[in-house]
Length: 192
Image (tube, rainbow, N blue to C red; front, side, top):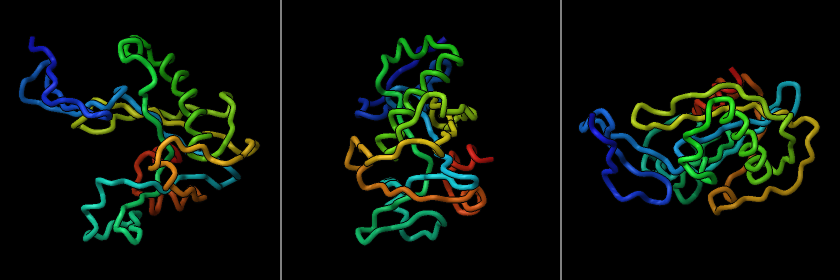
């Protein structure tokens, strides 16, 4: 059996690999392998999402794609679920976790990201696992998806930890609005 090989020097976020069972199939692997996405329910039929910058879409500015908005600098922003990467744990420890351990582990990530990106101070009991989804056939990444009950949460200033997060703006949507115009599969998956 072939061994997995890294084909290019990893950048801080991703690397390209091949194998372990095929020398011809290549895929991307993000730092920490998996990720988390969530939306915050703030009322009976009201959900908070973020509109954040997606640089890979900048080059597609000539295309009319519903849900992608461009600012005066032709930078692309997309209404999307909040998200976070799994980059604060040793990957060797992470891959040893079973699914239940991962579901619980990612609740902590959701709690941290909720204050960073939305300003919501939530409890672990406010975070509900909805499902997990394979991100792409060209990646080994799974995304763990959660609904956050933010109706009674304490809300304060966001604490973004990057310039990209600081540029984002948050907006409220109904379930039907999310299903109708959001091009973000994660938000649609969570409210389905």
